[in-house]
Length: 395
Image (cartoon, rainbow, N blue to C red; front, side):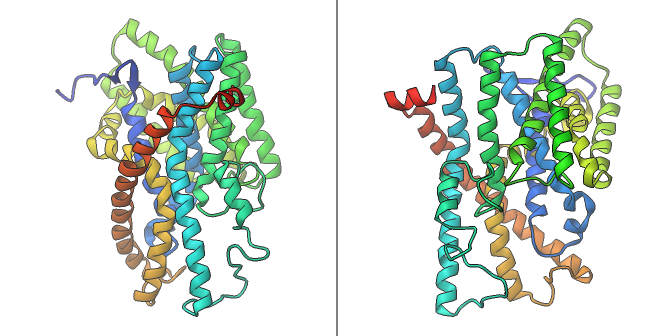
């Protein structure tokens, strides 16, 4: 295909595939993995990575965009709702429960290492499953029930990126209830959703210094991003209808708009810190609407196979990278104590070099968990026949 031609969006069955958005999802998962690396490097010293927690809101917007695109007009009775929640549970749960088992195993190893004298007890360190520990049997139970970031605890526990899985799962219930009882159809309906999004972010800004909100009010943060994605999906649908009438967009103009959008998004992450981060909704909205069209050269670049592959394993990347970062930090502290020093800016280059095997390991392990945990686990849960009582509870 000539690069001067307009690249159509791909479809799989009856589902449209948003290649650029999917590519960004994969790339951003890698950024999150770098953000959680504890050794110092010039890369994670950059403001874009340091303030990268605001990137998480874009994942919520991705979910809202996709859920509205897939299920608008399709959630209208008990059977469709049960099917919807079963599919979402099957998507989220297998690797979550797998990684919970990994982290519980790591906690037990910590206890054994301290008991055997292989590890020193640092000042202020509270071992898991001991008095006053945040990581105990209560938090194990809350992880199993996906309630661990619904305000039940005073901190993140075990696999702390999984807080987003907890809040997003319960956001699905809100979405489902809206689609069944109050499905938005008219313009003023979406105006109310926009007002609700603004209200959520305003309320959070009154009680928090920035948008790094997780275990306590993360559910509301998720709702803000999720429903921003719904608004973007609605506007994208309107723009797509107009594009069909008027023909394909101009490639040069589309590319210019995409470059401006990426630039402004990066500048927002770097410079709009503190309370200003609560203005993230307009940035996410513009990003989703622009790149959902897949009409510029940036979209084509983000549609390359490497980004499509990263998107495919992105959920695994997001869920498993922390335990790998912990392992690399432990090994690095013992093998390279003079070069991988936390906060030592002079050794930043060593940290950058150390990021290479770390990211290779994250990607390789993510491929394995995607293939042997995500896919088969999801298929099993999707095909699982709920008992009559379970169907009643779900309904």
